[in-house]
Image (cartoon, rainbow, N blue to C red; front, side, top):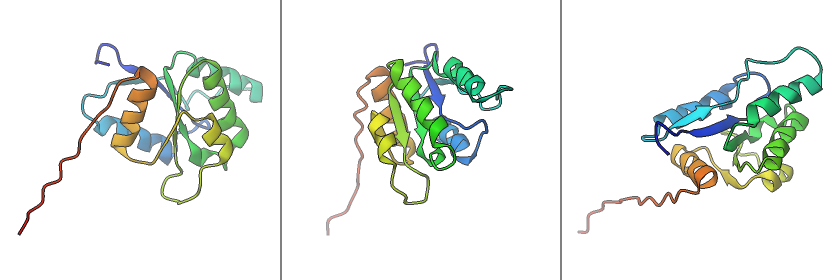
Length: 150
C-alpha cells in the first residue's frame, strides 16, 4: 500500500454521514502512512424505491477491496446493513466489523457471522484489520512499555 496504490474502502451507511461514519475517517486520517480511497457516498441517495437504493449501493461496493461495517447501524435498518455485508461477501470482499461505539451493546450474531474480523473502536486496531483483510499485509507492531525498577 502506498499513496499511489491506496486501499479501496467502502464504509457502510444508511444514506447519511452519521457520527460513526465520520468517526471512521477521523481514525483513518490520524493513522500515519495509511492511504485509502473511499468509495462510499451516503450523499448520493437515489430517488426511487428500495431496489434503486440497493443498486446504488452495489455500484459503491463493487470497486472496493474491503468493507468496513458499522454495527451500530443494525438497530436502525438491519435489512439494508445486512444487504451491504452480503453483497460485499458475494464479491469476495473482506468485512471488518466495528463494534457499537460507546454503548457496550453486543454485536448481533448475524453481523458477526458475516464479518472476517471484528474490532473495537481503536485507530490502530481498525487500520491493522483493514491492512490484514484487504491486502494480507502483516501488521506486526510492538508496544514499548518503559518502567523503572527500584
